[in-house]
Amino acid sequence: MTKPPILIALVNDYDVVARGLATMIDGYRDRVLIAEIDTNEGVADQVDIVLYDTFAQPESDVDELSTLVRNPRARRVVVYTWNFHPALIQRAREQGMHGYLSKTLKARDLVAALEAVHAGELVISEQAPRARTAPGLDWPGRGEGLTDREAEVLALITQGMSNAQVADLTFLSPNTIKSYIRSIYRKIGVGSRTQAVLWGVDHGFTPDHHRIEHWKGGP
Image 1: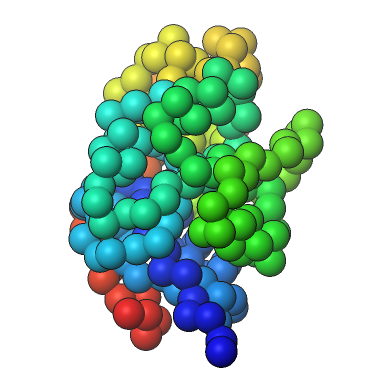
Image 2: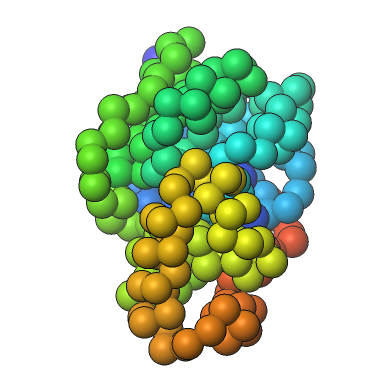
């Protein structure tokens, strides 16, 4: 007998990010089926796995992750991120995460990892240094040449965070944040933080607030 597909809820504050992830794994709907996409909304359906994309949602936000873990509608919760700082992985495990998966995974490998989590395994990806994000993902500013990491920094800045706060929340060094900001300014053609924030507001770098209850014929 063919096994039913694993039901997935995608959680991220940015619609374009969640939709990009949904599109990337949609070709495997016989194995994983997206039940809902939540942007600033709680998980409503009974799902096998919540896949929590950390784009512009600070990995150190223990309240958000704890809420997902406690939700009785979610059997398992998996973090999907590019940031593999050991402290973040340890904190996620302490909070009860069932997986910590890299955004460098190709769609087929991501689906296989989700299946392993569903089967009861604790799955933590190996993260190669300077690895690129898997093809198929999307994020605000991609069309302007921003990398996903640069876009995340800009999103946090657009939310009003200082360099020090961004560094603390992402577990990156202050010098790394400054380097990202210089690159961001150059790519979007601005010369100040105020101009960058205004550009971010105008180009989709503020969180969305809705739920997509049915993704392309899902349950």
